[in-house]
Image 1: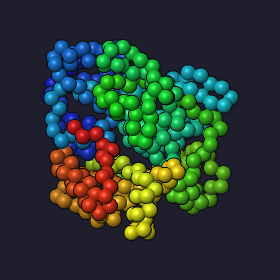
Image 2: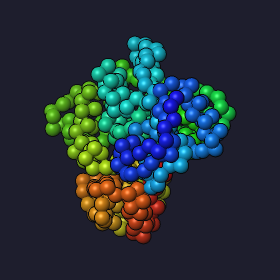
Image 3: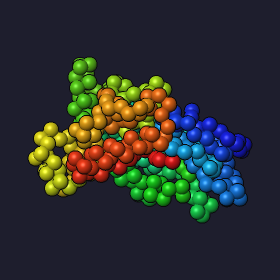
Image 4: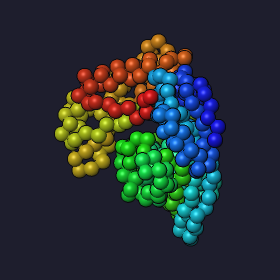
Length: 337
């Protein structure tokens, strides 16, 4: 394992923000994780595990070791007439995994097409889109416990998945994910509940959709409404959709009949953060080199070499504005360094 010094992180984060890692290494084998953590302890330096860099905002340089996960490989563990169990390296690109599974006609993650990042980052955030979350297909995770210095296998329940949350987020930096196992279906239940998916399928005159049709529809939807990070720096959805009680939902609905929200339990609603931000007047708004994307208010973009601090301050202004208007405190989905 080679540890490099003073490495630029600009190309390793989708915002394209300038930052430097005092120390940097890439991990391609499990034993290298143990080596990296031992080095940090000996040098008394913090560490940061980096996947695709698509859910992170660097507001400053990192005075420690950045561990870039590049463990690859897709292995078929078990196959039955109904399903398949696969093990995937944490460094695999998420969308390429989805494409691979769609080509094999293995269903379960097709609604998560075109989400940026790596496989190892998917469980941390419990990524989700269009009615599907990663937790629905994750069977178990192999991770290095930096507290006990032991390798552990965590089943789905042990991962404590919830909306955009997990054990790995709650106990930040404790577990370093090396492999993720997914259980995928050969005859899956298709999730086309979102109206925009049905609209695309209808336009294409597709009545009996396949998982490939679903994947292609979602790729089209995401491409149309979200900016390409290689052209405009961004991290996708910057904020979580807030969850509120039925009482708060009714109060906002009374004042704002066009409220966009979805019931998630008998007494809870998930409100579209993009709608809140748009109502507060931020959609398409620009301050210096930072702005809210004109097609999707949930996305903050770096128009021209904005610093991480400028992007953070812009997000802080949005949070304050939404709170003043609706009494709702937005939470960032992006990891702030």
